[in-house]
Image (tube, rainbow, N blue to C red; front, top):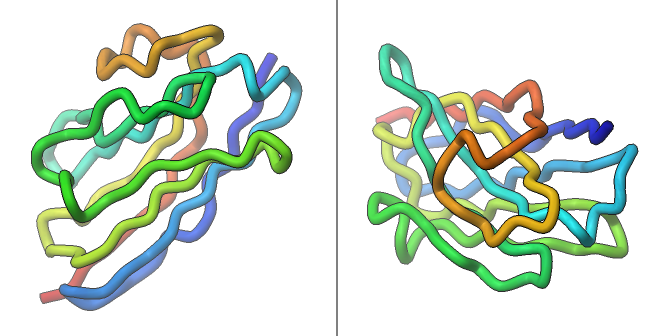
Length: 124
């Protein structure tokens, strides 16, 4: 059983930056593909970015390309989401998810474990 805990969310002005962290415990972190999803107010949860178990960034959503970067540190059992040039439409609860031996797909059903989420609010 893998536990995932997100941190680093908060309130930021448009154009600002935040870095989310997701700390994993209870499993062999390096064997998991990790992904970030988000759910904005009144919206369905959507894919943001993913990184395979080997550290290759396999996918990121068009809406965040060039602004968000996913990375992982297997020594710290942590995956990160660096978010730059934030926009009000990035306001959402951000979730990290884990998929054992995954390729880093964008499909939510591929991920077995989920964190509780971190709120990111971008003011205009």
